[in-house]
Length: 487
Image (cartoon, rainbow, N blue to C red; front, side, top):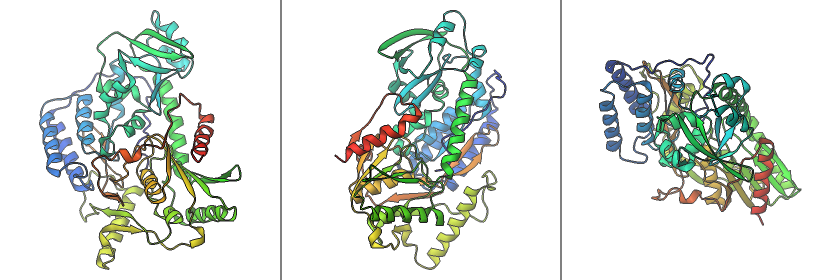
């Protein structure tokens, strides 16, 4: 999965526009495009419920849009419908105009809010935002007291998990489970909080932890700290761009444990990547390394890691299936964005699948590991680090290592499915609201049979839920925990 979670929302000027209402005719035109693209290009609508059930949800959406709605209401309807599909790749993204509608409500707390793991923290705001947020009365003193990342226990008498339960129906995730939704809401929590539970008060009680003290304070509501949010999102986007160019790293820790760190699988394919894998496993062989850590925290996927798995299981091992369920057609809807690498890859994969079917080698998309030097196949102990951001091809890799190699899981449950999902993101833009719809024409399956309890397999052998960690300490913290898991 590439670049479908992090979106930068830039507000060059803080404009408090009135929430616009659209005509019913335009709303239904958007719905027509939404339904057409979803049905034509989403790999399988029946991954987690029957296709008839999904068509029923679409019918309910059309009925709701037959009445005039403002942008926020329209977005709620679209996002809640997609959430029921149970595929984390398939999403609808807001627009700058929608975010301005949120800002115009002036019903946000006067400090930044971020999620790390499954905890909510305050964030110090830039001084530029003192002229933006509500600094009247007692707020000025209260806001300036927030000088770091303090855990928020509750807002408006709701705990953080309770707030996330309200947000969950508006975010997509595999099997509609909540873990991945923590990741999706992490950068813009206050927007999603407003979307799911808009405040109709002038002030709210916030209870947070500062050091050993639990502090309760009432904050007057107003505009969100938009400059602080922009700066944070720009930094995250820059880091995300770097991650997507990486092919991973490998080093040997304390002369006895091999450590792979994969922050993304977007670029993990081709000659350079395969050379990196071979060099790493030759080092493991030559140094007689018997323990390996595979760190997949924050890895939202990319290329499926079938080439990597052969170094753990050998050749000709069945890893599951990968099918282009909705291949490119000669005539495609004009609403799909086609001048990009994702669509070109879709065209290429469609041609390859047609050729394999014609040559009678497709075998319903079954994937087996390719030949490898037996001396390079690792058969020692493995620890895999996962968290709620471990998704798509990264969660399938964690599944393979756990079930085929008896690896231990450390961290928090992976956000992605260990069983199946739709992937191969393509983008369409609804003509009037301009919401970006992300659909996925491919479907991947692991080697596991279906399960009625798909989250049980993802529960870590060692669960880790730390307090806030500054970025420079995160890597060492999890590496230490993974090392201890071997003992």
